Every structure is written in structure tokens, then in C-alpha cells.
Length: 262
Image (cartoon, rainbow, N blue to C red; front, side):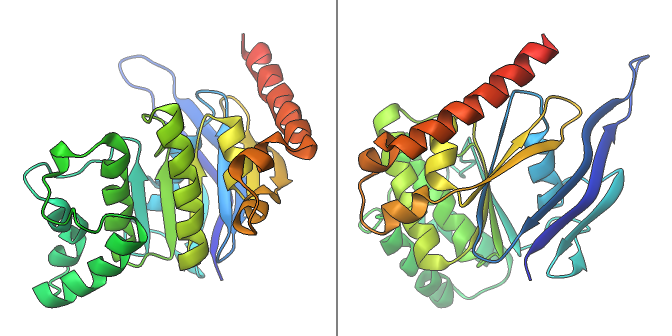
């Protein structure tokens, strides 16, 4: 059935004499099973607030969040979050980090290792199972964070700028890796980024959000990730004329929004 955000608004109450802040205004969004939805917009548009609503870290002031028809009332194993800062546990090795959530759920060690091994192979981490995570590169650490999220078998994977801290070359390789994982696992993904090119390349749907109060002002259905998965190189996809045309259209929307705020 998928995830539904129905007329969700968030107002942060004021304190110490400050006025209340409306972060989101009447957001309507549907993420069907297998969708890869990317959120884009100027800083302060409420992208992370929306992700936190879906994750259950926040409750909407008004409106409703539903996953497969059931109200989201807090965090749950059916939603897994990958943060920009990978939030790994430095005292555990790669295997210990990947299986940490399974251990908390009381799953036996042998079963934890069996579940983790599938994602270790999928993410190119074979041979690093006993490596301390602080010795890994940033890209490898982010792979561990993604593997940890996937081992819980969530219905939807929430990714809050997971590639923002990576260098340009590593970031491009990570984009391709995430698309391949999405294709292999058929997971639903909600992905936040500040990069227009990244958003267009990875998503099946792009939502553009306005500055505060955050609203979805534009939505694009995107074919570009499917072209990559069908065999085109990432460079070919990003250099195509229709990719460039949509990129310029989205940039114009975002620049216009920022000018209105200024």
C-alpha cells in the first residue's frame, strides 16, 4: 500500500518570547511500494522535518502519517533512517554495527550473521567484517550505515543527505551503489539532498519544497535512474539533453524561491 502523508503541518512552539514557527504547511505526499522519492528545496524548506515525521521522530501538529494504512505514532523497525553522519558505534567492528539492530531485537547470533552477510556482499563490504569502523573511509562507513538499516528489512528507507559529506568522485560512485541496492531490494526510499543533479539522477519522483512554511510546490516524474539501471552510464544519463533541461527548470524554481525569501 505504501506511505501517505495527509495534510500534515508542523508548528514549532515559540519559547523565551519567540514566536511559533510553522515548518510545514499541509503536506500531501504518497510513496508507493518501490518508489524512490527525492525531496529538494532551499535551506529551511522543511525537508528534514518531513523526514522526521515519516520516521516517527516528530508528530504532525495537524494531519496524519500512514504506513500501509496504519497511523505512524513513533519510530519503528518498518522505517529505517540513514543520516548524513553515519552514526556508527566506534567500539564495534563492521559486523557488530551492521547487526546491532538485530541484536537489540533479540535475534540469535547465527541468524544475525546470516542476515547481515547478504547486505555485506551487496554493499561490497566482504572481507571487512572484523575491521574497526573508524579505520574505514567515509564512503565505506556510509555503506556500513546503509547495510545496518537494510538488515532490519524496513518497508521504507529514509535517507537524510547521506552523501553530503563525501568527495565528488566517491559521491558519484555511492549514487550508483544506492540505485543498484534499490533495484535489488525493491525498497521504497525517501531521500533528501541539496544537489539538483543527484536528485534527478536517483529519483523516480522529485518533489520541490518552498521556503518556510514548507509546501510541495512542484512534482516531477523522472526516467533517469531507469536509464542507468538499463545499462547507460551515469555520465551518459547526466549529459543527455532532457536531463539538462529538467535540471535547469528545477534550478530556476529554487533560485526564484530563494529570491522571494531574500
